[in-house]
Length: 301
Image 1 (cartoon, one colour):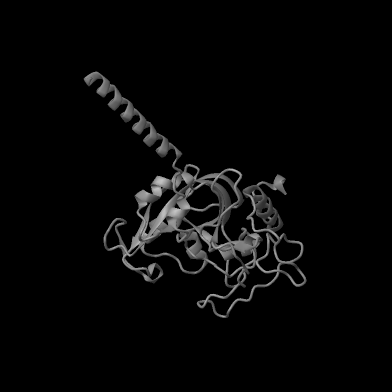
Image 2 (cartoon, one colour; image 1 turned 135 degrees about the horizontal axis):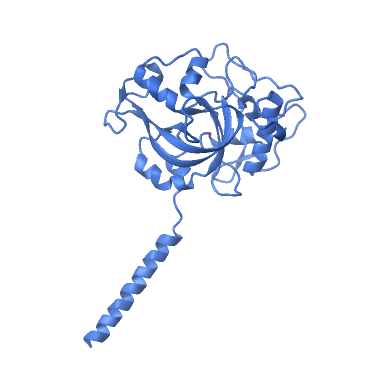
């Protein structure tokens, strides 16, 4: 009797264990960008440019916005601590505090990106061992450990970046604090929130640093809200800090528009609700870089 009971208990345990293992194996990992809650950004030029082509290295300055230093294709492989500030006014000279300090009001993590190819322009300081670190804001309600758990789902993307120290120097706002300067030299920032990611091979790109309407506006598709309703894309607006207010202007017809943000006179609204593929977007952006003379591989032109 005891032997029979032992066998039964063993079988029950095996079934329970197998069920649990199966559940764990079948459970999909949480999306990295979903965990980041699409709130990680360094807004540099939001709504101050007409199309994605305006972010391409070498694109003319608008007076309110400057193009990225480089366009790269890269894969997110890790996320690391970056820099933390005692207040959310990092531009106003807020004190730097330890990353894990309870006094930190704002934290910027670093996406470790394996650079698969530099497509246009050139990377600045902080490009070492084939990798760069791209600064993103860590949401206050999400730990770095939680982000690390899902970083394997982040995917491969096309990224418009600029070394932070070089960017600030270019904009006439050089970083002078020694601690912040050392950090600024080590990281790149996403320009114009221009980070377009393919989370899974063959899937359409997402623009995790942009809101949905802005992404649709730039990538040339109709935005569909979570409730399934299509919504018109917003018109570019000026930043209250920019004086005078910048009014977007059209590009010369000889330059690829990379899907302009506004429908030209006499044009039609986008007919698709699907974002482009990474391959299609890459072809468009490389064509724009060729037009600017900044494509790294001239044979691609």
